[in-house]
Length: 107
Length: 200
Image (cartoon, rainbow over all chains, first blue to last red):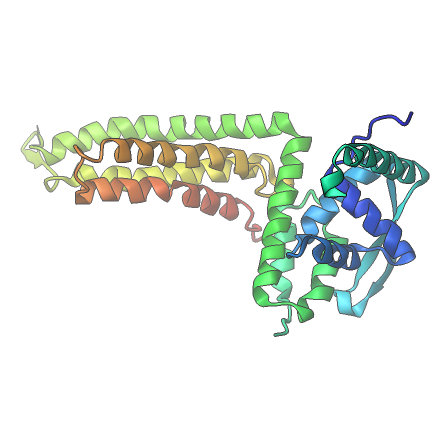
């Protein structure tokens, strides 16, 4: 039986966005993916706050890219989900599915 | 509508919250700004300030407590002599003193204006002292002190609304409300002044 997950909704949405985006996951596309999901503007600062927390927990790793002119000479920070992160997402899915099974009207 | 992001705004953010690494975030905001409205840009910067300050405070709770202590101490240091001065001014404006051949006096009601000058100075001084002591943290450590000071007007307004039947909204009452509501602004002004670089 998998351990109960400690991921919040924001954590889970960001981890899923990282898995979808693959190697192109940095602030802007992650925020756009979240905006499409929740249907309202997302603060990039709160996305970074969540990502930094996930990095500290070892669920995500980050890497700096090259600085570009369109970004005012600032580098992109790419994020990638780790093996531990994938396991947490799977555990969260299992927990949610178990809860869903008891509610056929929501299926 | 496209937006060319002003460079000074990002610089200001880095100065106000220097402990946070905003480079990648500012790069993302700069990249996205041409496709978004000006309101979006400023909202993102405001969110960066709030989130950055909150994270800084969470990482350094003892410093946040010390900042509150410095705020209270500054008020005591400034307001205690001001209170004594207020008594003298009150006597002078309500009659005055004979000092030898001289009659020392002030215009009637002059003492009523003293708090309107001293209070903003005291609260601006508290903001200045907090930021001066924690200069490496920008104005982030002003946030807990400002929130506490913001609580005072809220309590005051609640009391006023509770006693609205018996308390007429006369000019001094309205003046008192406006003056109290402006205190957080004075704290931030004092804090911002402490960040102005010194000329050499």
